[in-house]
Amino acid sequence: MGAFLLPRDNSDVSVRRWVRSVLEAQGEGMLSNPRERASIADWLMADLDPRSRLILEALEHRYDEGELTLLQDHLRQVCSGIPVQRVVGWTEFRGLRIGCSGDVLIPRPETEEVVGWFLEGMAMVKGDEAKRVLDIGTGSGCMALALKAENPSWDVVGVDVSEAALNQAKTNAIELGLDVTWVALDALDSATVAALGRFDGIVSNPPYIPSSEVLEPHVQDHEPALALFVPDNEPLRFYNAMVPLVTSCLVSGGCMVAECHTEFTKEVADCWKLEGAQVQVLCDLQGAQRAVRLIRS
Image (cartoon, rainbow, N blue to C red; front, side, top):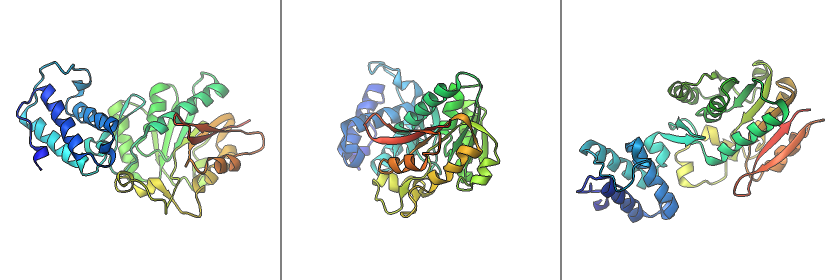
């Protein structure tokens, strides 16, 4: 418990050193990685004072007792294994601050890459004119909001079966001042999705982890199962449901991209190989097969 005692000196330099020393002393799980510890320390300080990412350590900024007590509580939670994004309640996604309650997946860097691949596909087939795009399984709304922020003229629709997730997405949209349409529906009901009309592009990060797969505790214990898991005998459940959308929703020349389990990208690509469609498996920055992109002829 001594590691969590507040520092006597409340200057910015001393508080930062205290945060790092506490994280280093705990040193288990994610905290055993020095880079991860440094990232978490920066995150906690940025939440305490948004200016802190720009403040040189030599600057004698001082924190009051309330701020230090909050930071102490956040440190205890992080050291107990709760992801820092859950502790502070937000993360960054393509330059946007995205709120992430326990009802939604924490947006990850790999999904930022999915947005990039989707934008590349849209640029290849449709040029610069205004587009209508659909985000299936929107969760926090991170992908839909990033697309709208980077393409203000686009008509963006985000759908999810979880009302709680949609509430988080709506809150994020309001805080960011972005106009996105949110719809509650089951993505497995292709006819209901098709009723939304035609789209120039479809993007998705659906549940894709087999239910028997064992995940790291910080994922298993702190992410919503609804957004993670599919039955072991149906690993392509959501990707199969997207196949009819190619003809019912996607315009000619349209683009569809979905994040996938790294062990099932080939299977997803195979089920998406429709007549005339161009299908490509995409690898992330670590070289893992991360997504599949389809361009409709």
